[in-house]
Image (cartoon, rainbow, N blue to C red):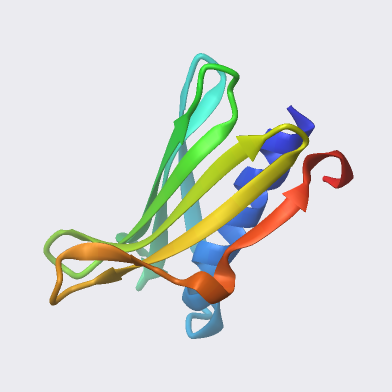
Length: 124
């Protein structure tokens, strides 16, 4: 469970860095849980005392409750559009985190090799 909390926190930080870097408004978070597991999160911006859609996260897990995917989408004013997908692969005591950025022209996620990392799960 400690590993899961670290991964969720790391994923939210990575996806939220851009949001917080150029936005100083208040953000409001609405978590969606199923059987005690966070499966989604919607982030709203406070604009003129109204909450408006900003970011949306969707999480997938394996049968051992390890997060396997974190999909981050941005609100474009009309609909949620893909932005970033983080996938986690567990092998023994290691977890590999692979980052993909949405490519509008290709209409698919494209690997960002420079952001792929492997960590020893015991150090988390």
